Image (cartoon, rainbow, N blue to C red; front, top):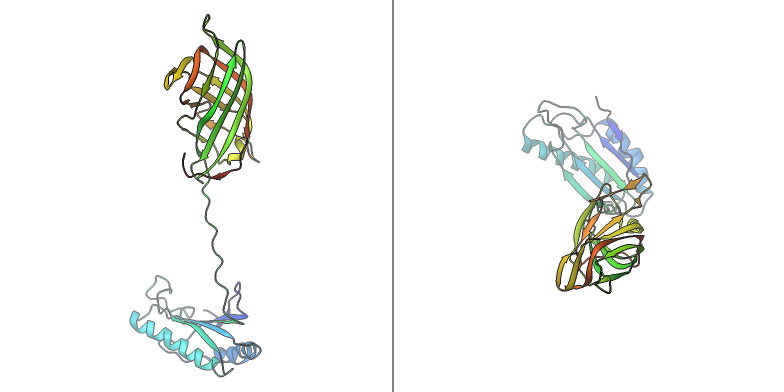
Length: 293
């Protein structure tokens, strides 16, 4: 059986309790209720300027729902009348009869816990509930595009390309510069091996675990497929980027696909058999909101 007075903790109220075991179908205060209100609640209210009191009434599920709703309101009034004696100005701000709406699923449950009134006494208006921080969904979906850059090669290969990576979940983006060196293979007797490209379309990729944009600041490898580009016309020649050292406090994170294909934009690529370079993908901008390309 519920105790007549059950303390309520974990609130900002100066004193709070649930007055239980009202007689079934009645709203008269029990002696224990009167004793608690006259001694403890009265002492708190008389020691404050402008006390603020919230009352919530309940009834068990036994009986008619409409009757129980009215009964819970009568129980509130009984508590309110008693508290009103303690000071000339008591602010009864919330007086809400809940009837049997929160009294469990059992229609035969006549527990004294449900035959009750909750009393909360504040020194002033209770503070508004703290806003719940928005839930930030873990980001594993990204896309990348080449913004511009080029490479030059006779035998040794030098690559310098700007990339933009977009966090598709958080709608954030940042720019990165890939700088690397390696080997390029050109078709003999065609001068000027190398390539220059403008911005191309984005390519989607994902990570095996949640990642932040700054984590893509990493060593990397850049491959270029065999092909040729003249202005807007291109045959092959796609870039492929492998980002090698993405990690968090747990372990390494990998991209899927492991080597991300990235189409170039309009530009020039002298006919060649491809290239590969090793270098660094360096973050060269702040992370900022993504509003489109």
